[in-house]
Image (tube, rainbow, N blue to C red):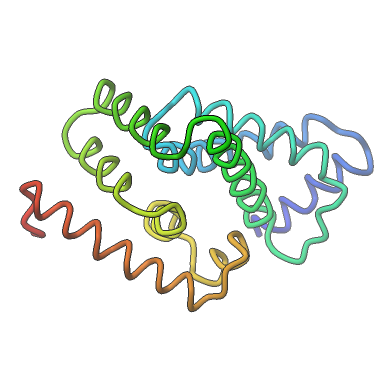
Length: 181
């Protein structure tokens, strides 16, 4: 039923130019998209807000290209995924990913406490693809087939990234005093 409602809202925006319908979509998905970015940026709230805003701007300007081949949320996550990787590619050209990760980890340490900080530090240990798969699967509760659509990876590759990412996170957390209970 939620998908039908999303399709009706998309139709209102595209056909009737009803911006309030798009506002409804933004309100419905803004917290999940922002949370996705918070996990990808290791807790950098300002950057997460900027990337989420860019995602919704791109979604609005490309809404007519939504073909309903997947759910609206999957289509929106795909845009968010591309926005994040465009950002990473831009950062690599100027300073390298390692500098960005260190900066984000430092900001996270300044803002976060307890377990959240440890999770972000653990996520920092993962490769980008592993972090994306872990975030979408465990934190956004998306199934493997949707993650495959969002990332453009085969389902087997998503499963491999999940397995390696879980193993790395478990090792990191055990080394930092979490006993797995």
